[in-house]
Image (cartoon, rainbow, N blue to C red; front, top):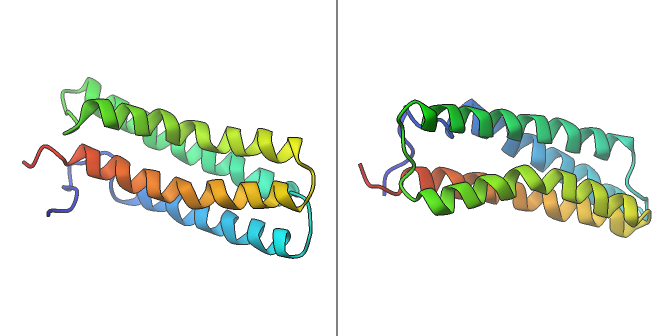
Length: 130
């Protein structure tokens, strides 16, 4: 199995930055949940920055597609892309609806899912096999 090529728009720093950011927010939210703390401003700020990073990743991918590049599995790619961009706002809304430690747990869970979806996005881009 090959890794995403250098010409892949969903690889490199544009994918690594949201993964690292998401994991940092997840750790922060986990500590808050263990300490029985509701979501705080740092978690919400982290979700906002994560959303911006994911939007940049999505725009770069869509520009590459408009320029003639194609993902290996277009249907799955678009599905993962939409899901990925929707995750931080979903976490934000659910955490605001649950202003207890479980709100922090929600932020943690969503931030642990986001890196997996980024990796799947990369895999569906390269799925063509060439």
